[in-house]
Length: 302
Image (tube, rainbow, N blue to C red; front, side, top):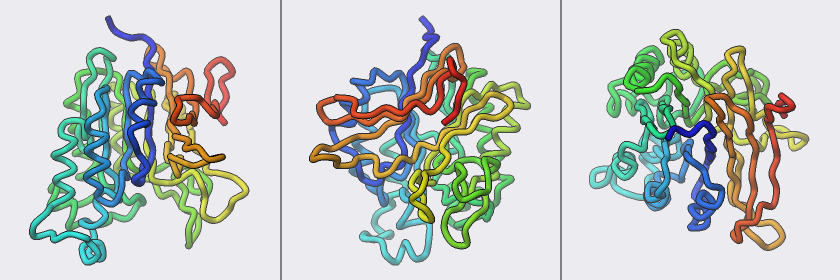
């Protein structure tokens, strides 16, 4: 029987902060689908393997830190391993298998939706970065070719309703440093979203796809240039698509002597978002805090 109410957990930038209680928490929260938006560690095979082993429906995209010692010349110089012997980027991809949706897609028939991944390993912004890495790994040379590869993944989906995940978000969500993908380091200001991601979303709509939800991370909620506020993390466009930045870091935090784990929870009802909240719970599976950032009943965005 097709589910009409779907509970989705989004796990933002992990940065090595993952343990056995996180798998327990996903079971406790009774989620139907888990979406991981990258940056598990600096090419951390251990963390990636632990997440690959989770036995619930999931879709994953790797982030810039997951190619930290491979994509750049300075990274290769600092790598704690020999690139002539190991290829840890490929090892991560092999571990994740079909659950990695970067430049790919995954159908979830029991949910009657598909998940599509944008460009994996993204550092963000309107400058095409690390051309050698993308050419060698994917045969991609620029934003246009990257858009085409994402759209090709969309064409392979089986369902009209799709969710997009990326490591970095799409261009067009604001250029102020406090905006969802705003650049909050020097020189301050500017939209640091990915233009190929934005273009792929627009083309997918033109092809008749319904896109209720887009989620990503990379741009941490805590801002560098001010402690007076946090980043705007949720947007909704004229097509009723919600854009969630899930990079709540650090995602495991010690408060009053106990470790608190952070998740974003999204409720999808009849292919429409009805609730989005940030959850913090301890390792005894007690919810310590929950912050509602969207509720359909009151139709507000926080």
